[in-house]
Length: 284
Image (cartoon, rainbow, N blue to C red; front, side, top):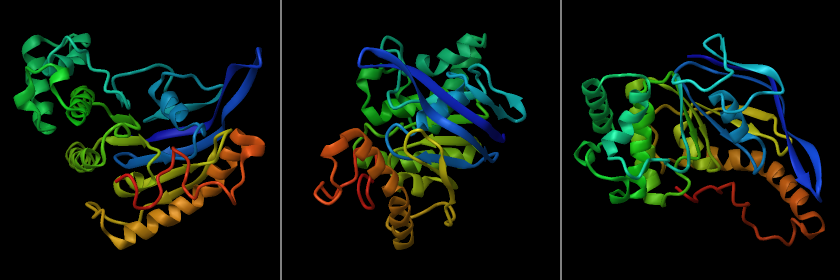
């Protein structure tokens, strides 16, 4: 299911010093996501990563240009494009299986088929024995797996993921990286993945779009030159990650300079990237 961003731009109105002003979140941007690939988007804070995802999800409307999925223009949300957010968004009063069934119920699918489909995808994420549990009885990683199962149950053409693992501890993230790789291989779903973690993107992706600082735009689209599955301990992957980190460092420094104004001094500031970028070897 090919995705095309055709000269897409987006701006918003915000208040600053009591006055309304329009700021550009995304400069005219054109790129293609290939059918069935794992495509990640990284960049400094405020560069428009989530804006791109929201435009593709149909949650935002572009000022100009168009987003197309398989040749069809995106102008509203649809079950062919499901989203997994950083917060799982499960309904706490519903059981795990009922949460997974919910989207199917909205589509008018009967109770027996809903239950069978929910169990199919709960087995896929290894949570079938928790089908009758409530969300608060699960760990954070398990709740995210339910959110993934809920999205996959709709059998979308495109799975959109907006920093889905950033709130999890490193060990749980490692497990979910491997689970996501397995699920992607099984379903052949096109995945568009927004992350602040460069090493995560390098481990998971076929290609990575690196973005400039705000207003956002494409800096480069990078091919990840390693076959799946990958070893996190691979020296080659570590070298690739370090090079990718260096590539966006100038953009991160520029954003920090804009935010801190006269307080920013790259020579005396801590030798650690801002919160939205993970240096090689960290956070995975």
